[in-house]
Image (cartoon, rainbow, N blue to C red; front, side, top):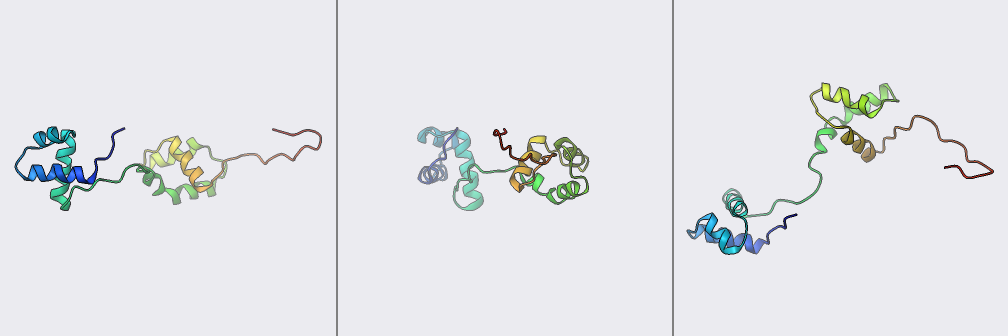
Amino acid sequence: MARTLSRDLRDRVVATIDGGLSCRAAAARFGVSVSSAIRGRGLALEHGQAVARPRGGDRHSGKIEAQGGFIRELIAEQGDMTLVEVQAPLIERGAPIGIGTVHRFFVRHGITRKKRPGTRSSRTAPTS
């Protein structure tokens, strides 16, 4: 995985481009990719400085979080729905969400899908 360029290096690349060197030549001089030099120059023009974007994190759960109220209503109406049965109405509503995404939503919000009650503890031998 690629590393984030240091702020100092990004500033030097942008300053060199501002000084008259092309993006390709500046990238070659500092040993960075051409796309990094171009992106840094664009960020400097837009924001005044070449700031790095945040790395990592969840960028996709917003789709299902927007449907959270609808999912909770579905579960309230019919409590023993499978993941596929929860996924189908979401797709009908125009939210193409996978089964894994639905499962992670349930885990994140503490929604359990166990359909049978737990068994009593055995007095003679441990149960699995």
